[in-house]
View 1: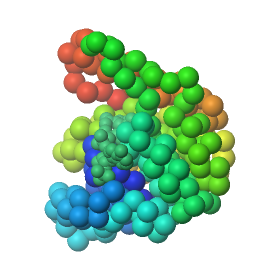
View 2: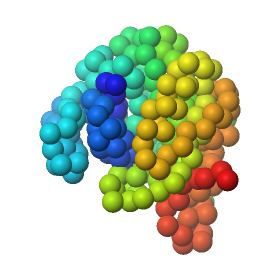
View 3: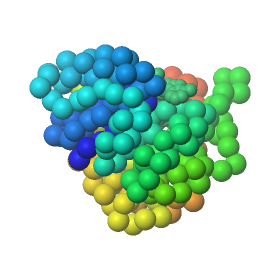
View 4: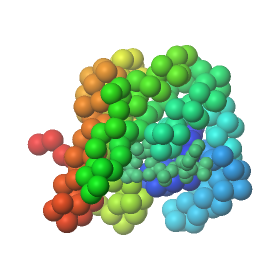
Length: 213
Ligand SMILES: NC(=O)c1ccc[n+]([C@@H]2O[C@H](COP(=O)([O-])OP(=O)(O)OC[C@H]3O[C@@H](n4cnc5c(N)ncnc54)[C@H](OP(=O)(O)O)[C@@H]3O)[C@@H](O)[C@H]2O)c1
């Protein structure tokens, strides 16, 4: 598939870009700056051994040219980016990994009354929003030598689009996508991430994903 990673120059975008590219997908790295997108695309191509289809461009071109887009931008800026791109994302599946989270002292807290995915859906009324990937620790995920076995809860109201996203995610070795119900359940899934971070920091354990056994 032709996959846009909007803000794909950051932590989560890197792992997604390299791992989807290794599976043969065409990857469009989006950024606010074309130069940064190109330089990150070069870096990712080098890490996966070159010759693979990873291109850099501004977010708008990535959104325009993709079949499916991942909104890999910090949540406090992602909604505004989605609003600016709503026309070019119209009719497309948009995946939200957004986690509304803040720090209160040394504690991570969930920082919204509404899920980020529902905020994206109300901004992108002509797109199909699916919520996924919140619990993937980006640094470990972007290390291609890393082996993992993680579940990925996926929420959405369009069953066909949800299945497509689940299939795409499950193509990545070590990830198992699980149906977590409608988009209104996204808040439950998004709030697992501050829980994980509190567990990691308080107990000094490595970055962790989730597995439902
Ligand atoms: N990090 C994780 O472990 C992790 C795990 C699961 C889910 N998530 C979620 O995934 C999303 C991305 O996380 P991340 O850690 O990859 O983020 P990040 O590395 O901090 O940022 C990703 C990209 O967002 C773009 N960006 C920053 N400020 C922006 C603004 N004001 N307007 C538009 N674009 C802006 C930047 O791209 P350009 O400068 O190139 O435009 C940046 O490279 C977040 O919503 C997060 O909650 C993260």
